[in-house]
Length: 168
Image (cartoon, rainbow, N blue to C red; front, top):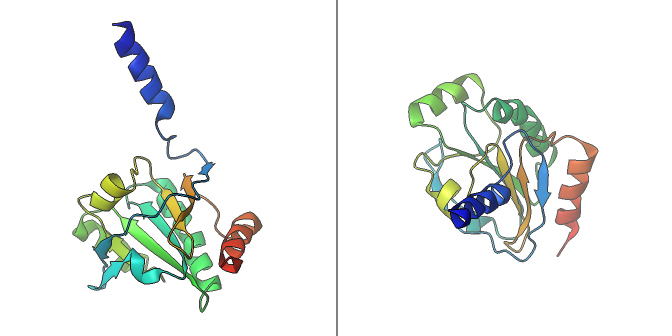
């Protein structure tokens, strides 16, 4: 019985924080898992096709209030970095109908990919809290994994992206 209690305590301590928490984990030696997902525009997007660019992958859902609040700053970041070796990919866990309804009212300037069955979110990236953002460097390695929303227009976040853009 003590073993089971200790196991659950360790499990809780190693679990990702709640969606409202802000945490940065440096994982510079972890290769980003490649994936292919269909976008809301009908195109297929593959992470490996962005090699040579910094890729910000934002895992979100329309039912997640912090996710929705974060989207305008992601849109502004995408626009600010236009023409540079940087791309935002928004990976939605929503059903197609809900996502289309949301995007009709709130268009986004970057690809929105559908991960309805959460194969990429859960199976490849172990996303259990939304929003979760994974930033991949130009060589395809995870540079940062962030739990919770961020203000992507803040100088701190811009500096991090700029630093990654200067590397390699």
